[in-house]
Image (tube, rainbow, N blue to C red; front, top):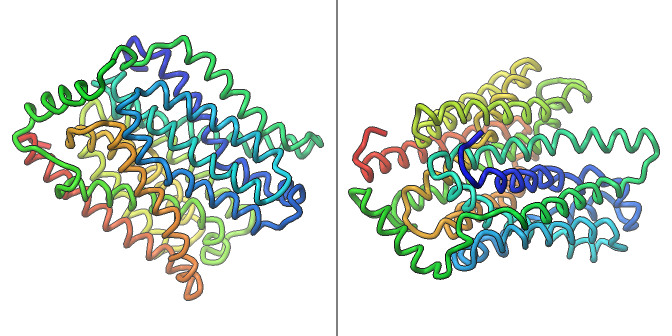
Length: 402
């Protein structure tokens, strides 16, 4: 896959994100069971799910900076342990109130993992950082594909729903024990501040112009994190209802749209890995964001079952198949500050999108559900413009043909 002495470490990190793919949907997949356990309805369970985003946002930026100071291993381990506590805690919560506490821990755990994992992979595979980070998407999507099949099997055979939570927690325990014996790229660093200074010196020497978080490209990257998250989140959450109410699809056919979306994202990861051997990640960003514009426009303009199905696959390919990870890799290349802090800033904007966009969509739905995809097309257009700005600044900063 990649050539590095840290490849064994990478497999443990990828296993964590396989479980994260399950963890991202395990509460919603068990909504009926948890609603009965907590003596509430779907709204009550949804309030627990919503706290995941709040927990993620609350510590993401800080955890990124601390990861630069105290190392990647610590935050990967914190993420694993917090995730295990969250999984078991939600499962055995006696009420919605207690569930909300552990739901928040889901988000905190995800932030810890991001703060340690993305920089660790970047440092483990400096020549293949974009591909190494993008590969995380495969493991996330595979986890999301397998969990519903597992739960369907459990329901059909009368198996207790809680085993889905315990299975995920068990995999994390295995990963924790495994990673304890694996090396991390900055284990030997005792003075992280000196490491950051050296990194800045090396990066700046390669550039014609310096760059900062609040430069044009820095702001563009932050907005890109918001836009990128919004584009695929809209399709992921609304595609089923759009298929039934706008495309005229049956209930069963409409449910498969999310599967096509996931399949597209998995295919994109492998395509991206091949493309990064010949094209710069910043150029691939431009290509993918343009495909997002075309795909979302097609779904809005021609909402037939065939076009909607193809569009769902293409949005998964273009917007959820690793383009955010590519953006993060380019950002760490262009802006010479701590990689953990960059990770925190980039994904914080995506977390904000998870709060803002649902509120906007709730208003749009009251007018015409088809306008949801028109709105998504507009979001994708902004993302494409941002990618062009980033590409232009990349060319100017490095004085090479991007």
